Image 1 (cartoon, rainbow, N blue to C red):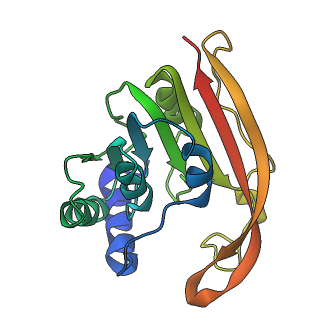
Image 2 (image 1 turned 60 degrees about the vertical axis):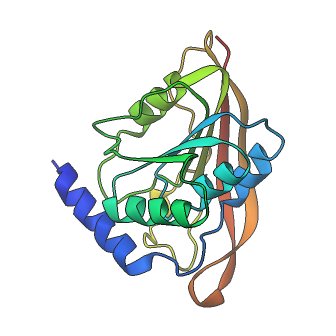
Length: 205
C-alpha cells in the first residue's frame, strides 16, 4: 500500500519543478459555475498551485485550501500574503485518503483529482458532500479525455462519463452531470480540444 509519505514526496517534487512564476489561473469550470454565487465558506480540494483558492478569495470567499503537498501549500500561503488575501485563505495539508478538512462549507470544489497513487474517490467525494452546509454545492471536474501533454496517455484511465458518488438522494441532489468540450492550452502553448466531466451536487438538508 502506498504511504502518505511516498505520495507527498512525489507531489512535493512535482510542485518544486512546476510551480508557475506568474499568478496561477483559476480553472475555467470553477469560474463559470461560481461567478453567480454569493460568497461564503469554500473548500478547495487538491488546491495545487492555488489559482482557484486565490480567485475565490478575491471574490470574498473564505477558503480552506487542502493539498498533500507542503511545497504547494507554502507557495499558496506566500502568494496570499503578497496579495493581501492571507486573512481569507487557510492552508491545510491532507492526504484525502486518510484525513479530511472540517466543515461545514457552502462550496466544495474538487478539480482534477487524478493521481498516480491510490485514492478512494467515492469515499473522498462522499466526505466532501457530507461537509456541505444545507444548500451547499459540491463541484467536481475531471478529465474526460487525453490531451497530448497528459501525463497518463492511457484512454482507459479517464472516465467515459461523469461519475456520481454514492449519496442518499434524500439528502443530496445531482444538479448537473455533463461532458463539456473546451479548447485547452498546454505546455509550450500547444492547444487541443479536451473534454471535462462536470458534476454539481447540492445538499438539500
